Length: 80
Length: 210
Image (cartoon, rainbow over all chains, first blue to last red; front, side, top):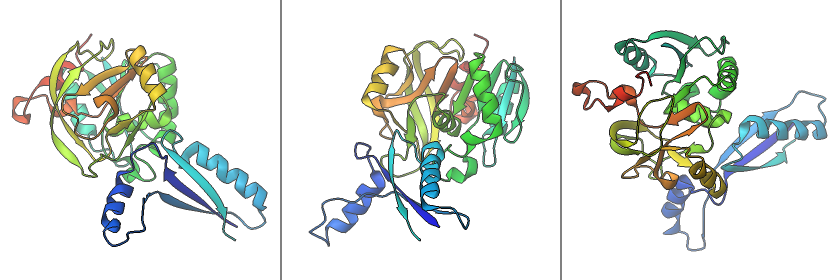
């Protein structure tokens, strides 16, 4: 069981890495209106752990360490 | 005074702080990141700058979860003055002893230069009256961020310790240092401004007995 934690800066926080990447892309891709850079954390759970349990634990990990809620938001995805 | 100086893997201003405190006549002891300590054993606790844990995840995040920081929290509850410089400031924000967060500089570059600062509030524990001082900065992630409500609280409580005259990194409200209770944090490095050959001596005003 793998859970992906997808972390992005909050919209109201200046994302200077995303902005710089956007500036590099926009000249060649007219359709682009924004770009945001974050982090991807892949959590491997032991065999036999249920999806429900893994998601609960992932959420606790996110809140206790993986994100700083003042400046970041995250989403979870069950990978397998 | 007896000063406890924290060391993590990746701390690199530890000896600068040690020599700085010794030069002013204070006793120093190292506090290793794996150890806990008696929270009332020191008159001052300093968390030096550096790159603890290689700034993995977020600067200061992993260091803030170590055993030594549990003791620092207890020391704060016992009103022991605690100072975080640069990475130390980041760690204190991550553990919640100071409000706000420190993000990548808005120009994405590491900035290493001298800056002019305005000390805007009296700090009873780290002596520096209201004045203008000049100290060096050396950081890639020093952009102080706090939301509107948090900024209002800081302003109301006199929690803004010092501001940049010419904001180098995009910090909210030009903030270079904040205080909350007996805890204080700043991005500039006072320990790198204690002899004329360093470029200035304004850092000396920090550790004198108040």
